[in-house]
Length: 107
Length: 115
Image (tube, rainbow over all chains, first blue to last red; front, side, top):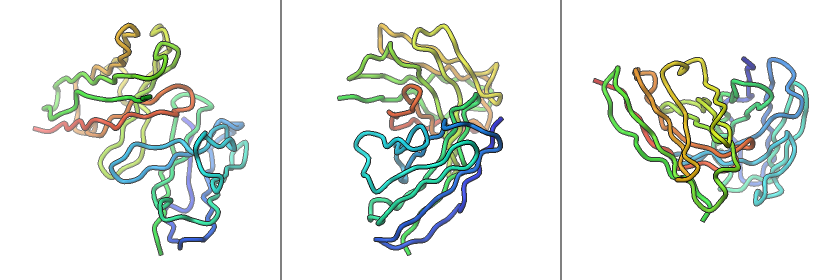
């Protein structure tokens, strides 16, 4: 199985900050990586697919980059509604796996 | 409205069975692969199973293989997850999700396995 390791696991930031979250795969997955946002009690929401393609309707302050084994989710100018947990997901091979999550909290 | 709505969760004893449903509306259900993903309380997301758009191909996580069965009825726009021999570690919110991109999720249904 492909393991995904996110860093950091916890991030404290302020409104207006720029933050980045890294996702490392245990083996190469080309660009078969997605990013999700999840708020408490809610279903995950797709933000980025194919490593860098913004899902329709997602604000442009979100961006994704990377390929192979290292990927990054960046959020420029944090907004209050961005404080949530973020997950990466690989779709290169089954079983599909997710990172352990990064909890982004208000400083 | 484009949506997925899960149902069928509840409290079940270890060793018991439960069938989850996921009703799709607002899009052409029969054109999409579908998945089940679960999340134990306070934990991360875990992929459970997938089914081809025509229902002829399925894949399972090792943790549920032989116990869970995914199926679909395209005439009823509904996805199912039959869960047998349930264990405490199957306790989770179960989500259905659409297609190769997981671009649409239901609200989830809670399954609690406990005596």
